[in-house]
Image (cartoon, rainbow, N blue to C red; front, side, top):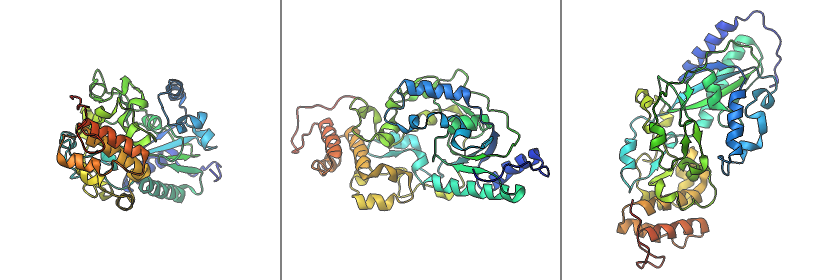
Length: 372
């Protein structure tokens, strides 16, 4: 943060805060709020989560120490955080439940069906900063969209955009949880919004719906059990105990959101950027498994999925094919990669073939498919 922080007596902080909320909506955000930087309560929860080892291999969660929970340590001079929300539920996408119920189709988390949100939101945050600068003169700020150690959900809750639900996602009474979050750290001493109030009540639908029991208790998530962690963050083999539970989810998992009663109030986004591309809302597992690396990179250009790379893409689909109904097409697709150059892919393909009672050579094996 490099701009001056001198007093601006000509500015009305309350009027500026109202303008910021209005400008944010005009720029395509669904809502905006303003928070202070006191995250002591959330810092204690973060440190406890890390101490339990629930972050798994996500070493970056611990790497930055308290800079994640103390904004002024990350960006000196920060006194307020402008938190923004952008809805992403893709319009016209195949119903999530119908895809999950079809073992031959690939389920991809709804947030990743369209274009990557990072660049889109950062550009709009920059435009918001430009509008603020036009009104205030130079000021200190930095924009973040999953690009730094930031407790985005805690800040959004403090900014009044919602509350952190029992599944640890942010919830809004007006929009459920189908949205992205972004932040502007700033040195402007703006008035803050009232924090969001919890409205989960006695509901435990998200806890009961989690396929791998990753939500070990209200507001407690063991990422090491989470399907999103295994299909996106985990670099190596997916533990065998979780493979049958993954079903046909090849990138992320939305189950805890799909059952949340508050999501009945969510609306499809009006942003064409988040519409499903390449038929990914209900694509065939066999078709996706046939993509070579060049095809994967070309079709995933501008997608959040591209970051996992072709090897893990195949790893994830192999698991889903292992869980698919046994058919000649499924077994043939798996055999086509039984000798894949990647040891990671081969191991998951061999596991999947065994699930269908086949060995690598294409003969029936002694392994029988576990009952679901």
